[in-house]
Length: 223
Image (cartoon, rainbow, N blue to C red; front, side, top):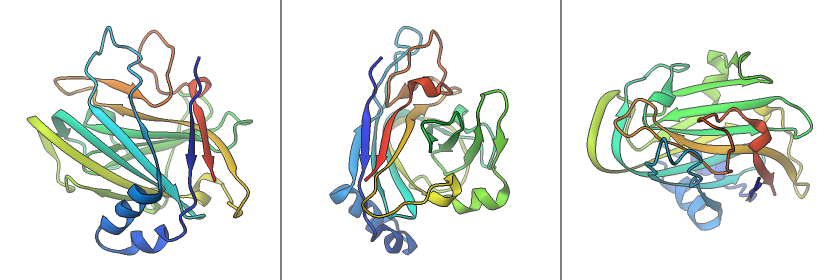
C-alpha cells in the first residue's frame, strides 16, 4: 500500500498572521509558502463514487500547525453546532495524526464547514478520550461559512476552513532545524448528505469506510 509524504514547512510569521481578526494574511502566507496536497483517494468508489474537490495547504510556526482546507462541492450541510457532536454527518474535513510513529496513540480532529469540532485521542477506535472544553478552545477555527447551523442545501459551493492546532496539545516540542516525523491522514466526508462520500489523502485499503486505521497513515514531517 502506497504511503504518501507531506512536508510541512516552517513559517514562523504564521503566529502573528492568525492573531489578525481576518484570515487573509494567514491564508495568503500558506498559499505562498505552505505545502499543498489533494484529498483525492477514492477508496470506496463502488459504494461512494462522489468525490468533491478538496485540497489542503499547510505550514507550521514552530508552536502551531496551520491547515487550510478548500472544498468545492454540490451539497452543503452544517446541522451540528456544538463541539463533540457528530460533525462527520455534515460537510466535514478531518486531520488524523500520530505524533510518534512508534506509539499507537493518535489524535483525530474533525471539523464541519461552520467550524464545529469533534476531537479525541485514542489507541483503539472503541476507546476515545474526548478533548476537554479547555483543550477544544485552544484549536482555532476560521470557517468561510460562518458559524450558524443550517440544513442541507444544493448548488455549486466553494468553502474553506483554516485551523490552527498547538503543538504542545499533541505533546510535540519543535526545535528549529530538527524535523519532527509523524504519521497521519487528511480526510473529507459527509455521511448524512444527499451525496455521502469518504475520501482520504493517503489511501486506505479496507472493505468499508474507516478512517481510524493508523496502519494506513501517511508520513507527515514538520520541517
